[in-house]
Image 1 (tube, rainbow, N blue to C red):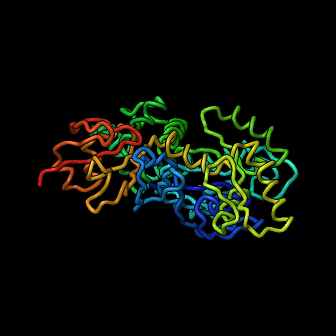
Image 2: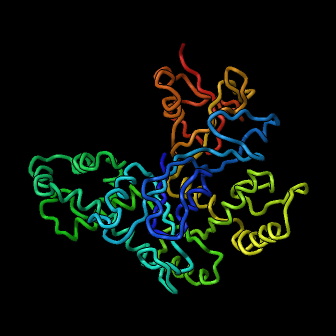
Image 3: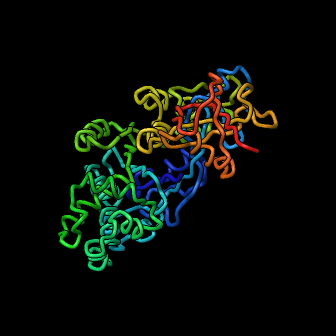
Length: 398
C-alpha cells in the first residue's frame, strides 16, 4: 500500500514526511524544495496481541513499541503542486505521475494561512482554496485521460455493448483504478453508463470527480495548527468540507520529538499524547524549555502532534483496512521457528479466512482446509470474515 503526501510548496509537506518516516528529505522555506519524490516508510498503529498472551512478541515485518504494533506502509512525498499542474505548469506532470500508485492522499495544508496559493509567504490566505484547487487538478487529470480517446471509447461502450467499468479501468491502467471503483463512481455521480457518447463535459467532470473521491480519497492534515491564526481556519475547513476528514497537525513538533527519542533524550511513541524527558539526558535550559513549549503549545491542546493520527485515520477510516496476525501455532501464537506473532498484515475489512490464506501464499490458499482462531481455538470455514486484530492459524493440505 502506498500513501501519497501532497500539497502546494512551503506548507510543511516535507517536514510531515520526515516526521512520519524519519527519512531524509530536504526541508526549506521556498517553493519546489521537493523536485524528485521522496520515498520512505511510515506506520499505522494497532494493539499488539502479545499483551494478552503475556509473552514478548518477535516482530518480523513490523515493529512493536510498548504494546503497540507499528505496521509499515510505503509513503511518497511528491513535488509541490501549483494551480495548472494538470496542464503541465510548475512540476505538474511529475507530480501527477508520482501519484499513480497511491491508495490514499494526505493533503498537507497550511492551517495558519500564511502561504499563498503558490506557496509564497503572505499575511493571510484561505486554506480552503488550496483544498479546492488540489481536488480540481486531480479531477482535471482524470478527465484529460478519458477525453484523449473519448469519442472512440464512448462509442465502443454504447454500440459494441461493452461494460463501461471494464473499458474505463483499462483507460486508467497504472493509476490503481479498478472496476469496482468505476462502479461506485457511477452510482455516486448518477451519470448514464449506457449512453456515454451523449455525455457533456459536465457529465465527464461529474464522473471524474466521483472517481477521484473513490480511487484517490483525501484526508487533510491541517499543519501549523499550533499557530494562533490556525484555530479559525480549522473550523472553516471542517465546515466547508464536511465530507472530508480534517486533522490538526504540527509536523515540526513531531519531527523534534522523534529525533529526540532516537537520541535517547525523551521516551516517546508516535501518536502518544505525552512524552517523558529522560532524567539522565544532558539538556541545557534552552533545549529543556523547547521541549516544554512543545508539550504546552502542541501536545496538550492537540492531544498529540496529529501526524500519527492522520496515518491511522487514513488507513482505518478511508481505506477501511484492519490488522490481522497469521501464525502457525494457534496455542503459542508463533510460527514454525517459535517466533511469537512475527507478522502483522494490513488487509481490507471483510476479508475471509481463505482470502488471507492466498495473501500469505498461493499454495496455502489453494490447499486451504480451515482456519483456527488463536483466542477461542474455534475452527472457521473459508468464508469466515476476520475481525480486526485476529490471530489466525491457517490449516492447509500437505
